[in-house]
Image 1 (spheres, rainbow, N blue to C red):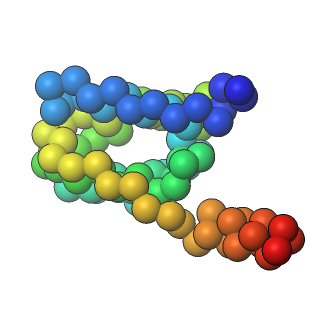
Image 2 (cartoon, one colour):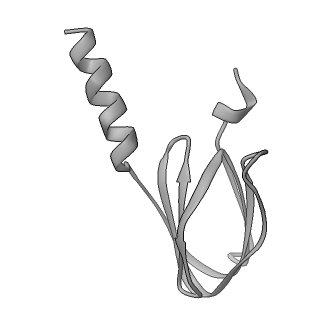
Length: 90
């Protein structure tokens, strides 16, 4: 399996989140961080959030603060890829 295709989330004490499989940061402030990952969009919600480390080349990110929720959803580019593949194999 390609290392970039692997996604992992490691949450320590609801204060430090290590994420792999990161393709980019869509948006962030002190209450929410929205990431584009190889498994979809990941929204991190909390308080006093900050990105302490980001390396898109390695697909790694560390968020610190009070983390209250992690929400995965599809993003537009991902949905278009899936529908194109489905159309090809119908």
